[in-house]
Length: 348
Ligand SMILES: NC(=O)C1=CN([C@@H]2O[C@H](COP(=O)(O)OP(=O)(O)OC[C@H]3O[C@@H](n4cnc5c(N)ncnc54)[C@H](OP(=O)(O)O)[C@@H]3O)[C@@H](O)[C@H]2O)C=CC1
Ligand SMILES: O=C(CO)COP(=O)(O)O
Ligand SMILES: [Zn+2]
Image (cartoon, rainbow, N blue to C red; front, side, top):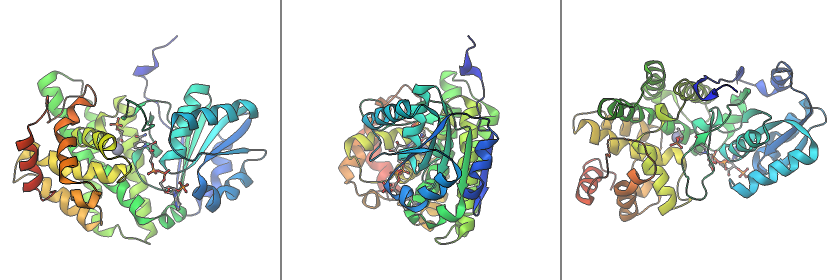
């Protein structure tokens, strides 16, 4: 058996644009998959585009997931076994897509991603995340065989989901800075290609932040392309390092301390403001990150995330405990240092 952990695994067909949902049948047909397609979706995407998807996937079956949990992953596995599913189609935001991704990994069948919201880079990546239990960060999973992202549908999704996707990409700045730091201080393997690609997606988003506006389909297009590139960077690296540093540790810890208050992307965006400051000090990139987030209407403060100052400081001072990933937080920062950075950057 080969050691596939060293392989670069990428989607084969990535179809992004206006009305491309109509091309789903072709994009899947080209993959030579066989067996019953099982559509894994959640209530809103099912209502909005479920029938259009099913029309193109003859004899498909559907399972609706209510939340991202291991129970729901098992529900999908059971439905797939009953239907003798040949492959899974994740239709919706991160909840149904990651549930389908985790179930397809377990079942060892292919998986196709049809995002209806551009809320984070998990919609295209080979990383699976179910925010339950002890492991809040993503784990290795198979990337989708194809991604079909209809910008007409995504542009109609609630605007905050798009701004969360933007913030998840902007946070790549600090993720790459943490990755380089870990290479210098801990000898962590760094990929120049993975790092450069990830950094470029963040730069493009910050440079284009003024063009990203609600109701503009071009905005959805810019964000989805960036999410695809970020997913590719993670595949090149063979880890989430290009897109996940201390700002993600902070967000994962916030998910434990104050679950369900804010979207993943919004949390990592605020984390990124603070960890950029920790990297570069007062004259560094943190203001550019904050201003880009503010111009998108993404949160830049604890209040904007719906968390108290104390909850935010607790997450920042304990974030290093989340996983074995060296970042600018080292083996932890003091409460005073956390308060200083949060106050200086205006986060609290
Ligand atoms: N792999 C990774 O790296 C990561 C994965 N994740 C995963 O993603 C999940 C969160 O993703 P997120 O996208 O925020 O969650 P959801 O899939 O729950 O989507 C967020 C909300 O948007 C709604 N929605 C989706 N598309 C549309 C649309 N086109 N129009 C109107 N409403 C829409 C959903 O409605 P409804 O619920 O009614 O269907 C839901 O209420 C986490 O639980 C985790 O599993 C998170 C971070 C990273
Ligand atoms: O969200 C991610 C990248 O944007 C995945 O990162 P984690 O591995 O920290 O969950
Ligand atoms: Zn993320």
